[in-house]
Image (cartoon, rainbow, N blue to C red):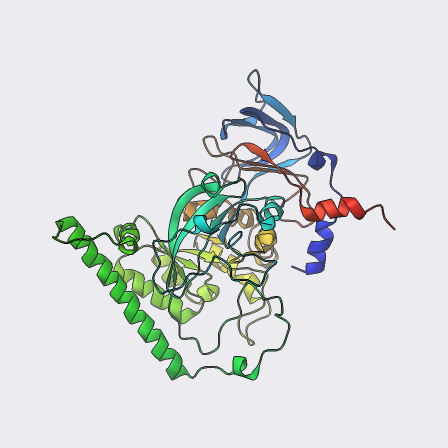
Length: 438
């Protein structure tokens, strides 16, 4: 996405509906808008009935019970809130060069939960929320097993109040034979500055292979140790002592918690699939840029994929210029469930445009919105709670004057867990302050 376009969008004047964000009580009805349910038909002149944070009615000609607040949204569009499937928002101070809380020391930290490291007061949270993102899956980072990923709402004054699911997956940075480090999704402030000669000198293949093999040996040994720990725990062996690292791995071994496996290149994607087969664990492939080269294997193993930013340059110099834009359609056409994450602390607000970028390259428009809503919820095991406008689900709702994937659209109202949240941002406040000055 052109940065200038995004800035211009942020500075656009907003409609009166946005300026007057309603305050929802225990019960309210959004009446008269176009309801995009995502898991069902689009309902023209529809209504959404909400009570105690849950959607209790969706359809035409709904009548609000006595005492419910009626919110007229004729001419507006209603969508489920968007979900960033891999984010570091609130765990990094984007305005500071100081180290953040997303990365942990050591190779194995499965016992650590990302939700505990989130700063609820981060300005990036309000900016993302104002653009229709209501939830994120927080992703810790590390050299091998980084920790537990947490699903949180982008509203609340404390970590416990924001947390929806404390553990959705455990992040594994899969060992790779890396001769030249990949450019991160989160660019540094001086990213445009030329690197030093030392930074540009790649490792030899043999050096990279040695590092890869050492990490694979350590990873396999850690899984073996976790299984030995489980056997000792079940047998109530004398002298058994609780180890929080292995306790965190027990749901993985049982198949109830997936490993979120970052594997970018074809080689490591294939190795990650083989590793999952060997260890008999469930995995989600993450940031799998070269997944388009391994489609049959991914499909046959019924593995879901969380793509990194679509609005990115090709990974290799000889890739097609539009390679990043083609991947969502390739996954969709192969019948592989996928969603999109920003893998970033400061790009969550641009999540809708990441999804939109795949549409001109073959991804159906309704599937683009699923990639940042229902698909993300289903991949992380919360499809019965989030991701669509369906009776019984949490009322995470976005009311806009158009398609939220379009930069010109104004997000007028955002409801998280049935509560109206502010769509004000510091950028909006500065715009209002200076718009009359010449």
